[in-house]
Length: 294
Image (cartoon, rainbow, N blue to C red; front, side, top):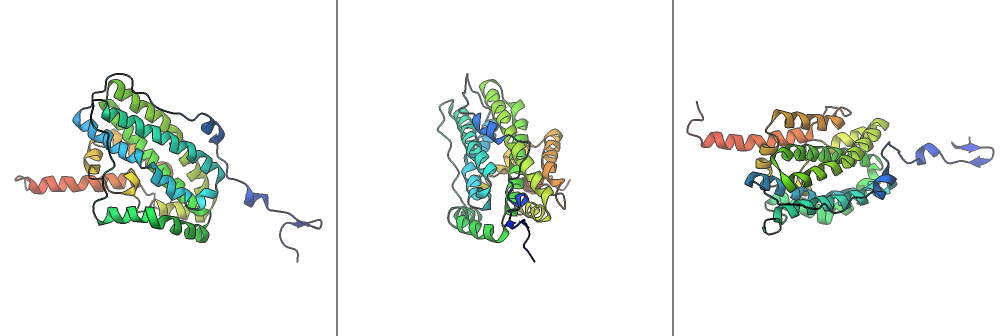
């Protein structure tokens, strides 16, 4: 019996297995039109709460290298369209972070710095990403193979979508140059969200293995909108400010549903993370109040 693909005395490759997954997103055009620095034109005035939230979002933008490392140290590095996109994505994320830093330093304040990794959990996450991730990802890529990419794309779709909602919630509290810079960051992020959602959806729909990989990737252990996946001390206050309105929370649900609607259990990672963080300070305030029993 001849092997599959054997025709007319020759063995042919199966084009369907070798074909690169294509979506409607034009990666070539995106890389050609990479956007550089965002200018801060005009005076910048940030209220204390807005400064806190811009600082948090700066820390998330600044840690894009961690997300890039997780993807490129795995099977995902074999995906030509994805690696081409990620080079420009990391470049644009850098300039997003730089623009937020310029807002925070416009009044002469010192440049923000990443927070030190305090606590056992934060140190373990940092050590894993720095030392163990390359080896673990390589082994995982051999074992799992291509479906792991669906998990990465689902995670990034949720992450970028949640950040987009956060920036849009912050925008009405800003004016002048700060408003213009954040509006520019929002406009640039549309490409990020579009790419990752299209890639995740196409892969999830393609096979049960990829659907399972995506479901695991956005499971209970995944907390989006964190600097390099590490808990941030300012997280609860920022989430409380950004997602205090019904409109912002509804937008966050809709953002998560772009991927959740394709997965078993309909997980909502961003919504879950916000609820979890907001519950803790609320309980803390109630237990400290002398009238909490009323």
